[in-house]
Image (tube, rainbow, N blue to C red; front, side):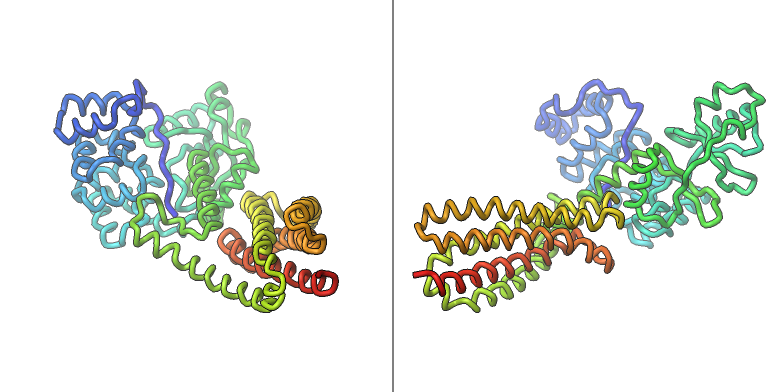
Length: 463
């Protein structure tokens, strides 16, 4: 899933387009009023210009884009949605795309070309420098959603044998093509990572101070590390910039905190979509048929599960016929079981994603969710008993509701905690599969428990 946008810094902000009348801007663009358009482009932030471009017809969007200088084009382009970026790549001239690629950082170019077919990618890369094309091709060769794809190959480094004066000279050279220098990496003659130096320490040190006296140890990330693990790494070690290395500790690039923020947003969005049985590729701009195609699979699975659940109800058809009131009460028990299971799933999946749930706190967490289910079941069982006896004036039906609520919620809490862990263990994404299994189980168990208790209690003690 691609959802990364590079933040734009160093751009003066006089006002945002929200303060203007959007319809008026759209009209002026449609009428090709260059005075108004140039004024809008000059005084608006690139992110706001991108937001306006998103609302335009493609012809008008390209017209506005082409009026900008190349640096502003880069800034605007990287703030466009994935869909609009794709349309631009399809409709801009090849030389225009090549000009744009020359201005993009390596991670930006890699990101932009990730969804472009190989033939088109080669066509774009033929028009840029050999050095840049090799860097982009190399980065595209890394697995998707890994540190290798996420990193920027431009970074500042100094030799471990340098002193502060030579180090500052090296940083100045690197600054010409590197944005946002947070830390300076220290390498040996073979480019193996040895540590890092803070920019502040380098600037205030005396010229002859050896880099080894300023150097501090640093954690690194292997290029094949999944981007979700990269985000956990940044959180754990409180990093703002981290080096990416190969098996021999040779530094390949760096990942910065702004990249990680986009990863966190992407992963959270992905988990939310998957828990709802929706593809992460779907957006509000997706076509109706694409949305149907993505959703229909999970709806079909849910339909199959519903049929299995119905078979449980049919086992107690005679009980329902004898005590018709059960038909109006049993969905309540199953529904509450489903809600309880979903709450437990949400907590477990989120903690699995952030790494807070591990083998050290696994069983205490499951035990906690079981206790929560038991206590919620007890509380809601008492409430259900009170409400049912008030509405139905039948002690035994109220007892069925209370006991079924208690047992179902207890089991639902336990299963909601257990299923994500089991799925994670067998290498199945718990975000996408947990709700399906838990909902199916709680529905079937809820109906079975409720109707089974009703069959026993009402059959033996009822009227």
